Image 1 (spheres, rainbow, N blue to C red):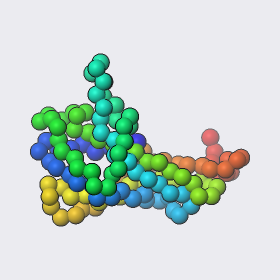
Image 2: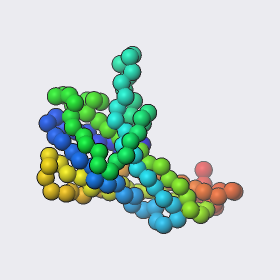
Image 3: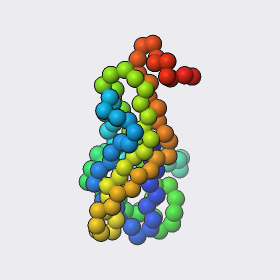
Image 4: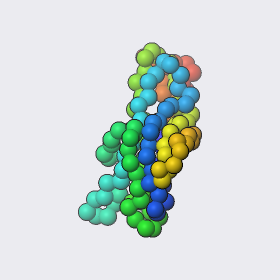
Length: 125
């Protein structure tokens, strides 16, 4: 998961698209939305189930802040050729409460992908 969104009580969000920032053209990145899954023991997990980002409708499900009002954006990357790739941000296009299209950039985890056998020398560790 590369981005967590917290939906404020009363808000409705329509996700229009998600685009990678910083990866370049040597890898493709797809983004998926993951809503929380609640287990009988009370645990909640984001990342267990995914769906398409484009067109997803989000609304707060609880009047209080907390895990029920959080969703994640999950990234799946496929390298086109060997190399080192960094996902430095996610650009979301969305509408808040039926308003005009907005754009926001953000990321919770910068993601580095090294693809080759052996690993590229620029990928240490």
